[in-house]
Image (cartoon, rainbow, N blue to C red; front, side):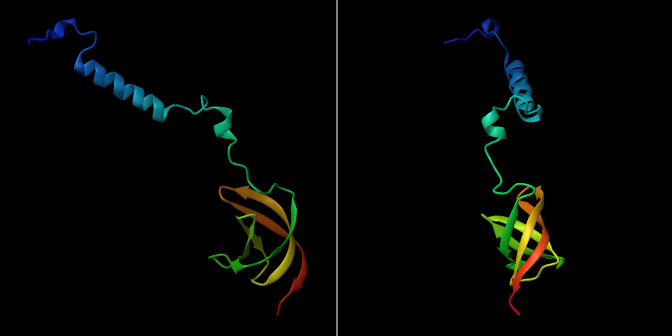
Length: 110
């Protein structure tokens, strides 16, 4: 059986070129066409300005902040150390973490 390639709508190189440009468009283009549910599907468990009473669990790697978790979110609090019980106010929310400002020491285990 002989196939006549002249009757094909699109040649093999054209198909590859179109597939490559389609893939590039999918990956390089802006994300403005994403549905709203994708944009807001993740919500942080804290908001800037919220206040919490927390226990400081550990120190940050560089040693300048205490570390706690608020509903699973790692939160850094300057001026604290492990075992401090403090009231903090959320001042910044980053990608996967938050920063809190020390408001008051509630009690400290010494």
